[in-house]
Length: 254
Image (cartoon, rainbow, N blue to C red; front, top):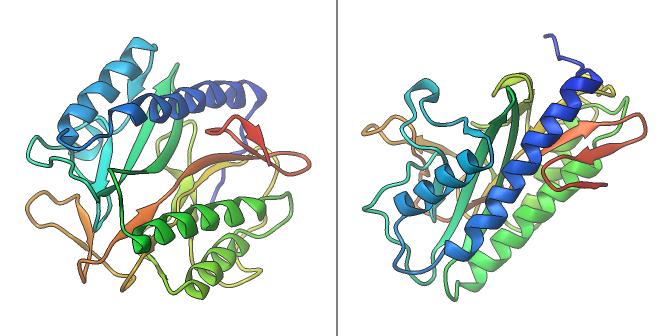
């Protein structure tokens, strides 16, 4: 496995793309309302990215038909925006965007709620965000990648939830998907050691019920919980620095 150590020029380019990805999620927030369909949200995302001199990376990637992934309620990831998916009170959804700016990629996702959601949904979203934050705290030079999945799995299970094991984080920046794979459930002190200049995503997907995902035969993309229970996800692109970690899609240093 070869993990690319990014140059200063590459890091600056990836930071710029990551800022646009984060800004896109900020922009779409006010438009997430009951009665709005997810294709309309995707159209707004597409336009916003283009107006800010970016390209939506998902569009056409391995045949994916839209500019973002919008995953609703029991959809774990890779939900395809559609006019038929109309938001209603009580829904939760993940919006996942990846931008290309000057050839560099930035990748992030966030949970949104529509109206008043259940207490179970609120807890799931809170714990999933905490899982991401705990994972980010493990990013340091010389630490092992397995520590990320270890703390995520421990926190999710302690709160009665499960961690999806069929999808993982990944290297990003020069390509959409690079090495390494970043597991969200793993053994402590396992895996390769992190080095300054590595850039990758952490994107835990946490389920209320069973951990398994099932991909729809109809489109070959939409991954759902096998038991119909809720799922949540948060994602950041992070850089291993000389002394710790910088969250590129949040514009802050942890």
